[in-house]
Length: 157
Image 1 (tube, helix red, strand yellow):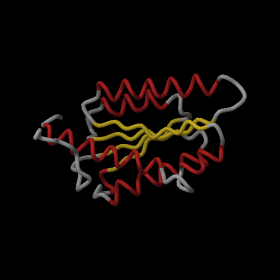
Image 2 (image 1 turned 90 degrees about the vertical axis):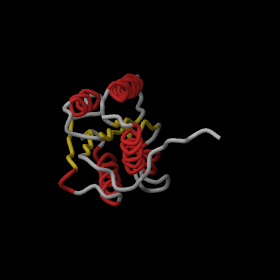
Image 3 (image 1 turned 90 degrees about the horizontal axis):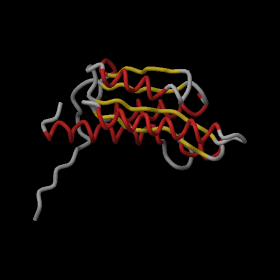
Image 4 (image 1 turned 180 degrees about the horizontal axis):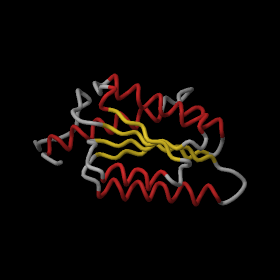
């Protein structure tokens, strides 16, 4: 039987950053609350947690890149919300932020997770920010903890 190596959700060691966009803050603040709650409940001390804010979700990729490349964090959680409107703006922003954060995750020496909502309606965003479908900010933070612990088990930076 092959050996399985995976991360755990216990006592991650190191500093974490949460990068969150202010645009659609009526949603992103709930995502941030969920992420911080998940990190603290899994053993991350307040002193080991920094929150960075940027104007909008489009700007999130650049912020996450700078934070991840700074070498201070074992994990970075990206949070934002893009809601479809009547123009192509949604496609441009949603696609670019997913690509940008994906590129950072591929090249960073730390764990990077994606907690950006891309929804068709405000109701869907509300549901995913803690009402009906859990809190996707908390989910992204938990994924980050697991990746940090997996990378540590692998001997990665």
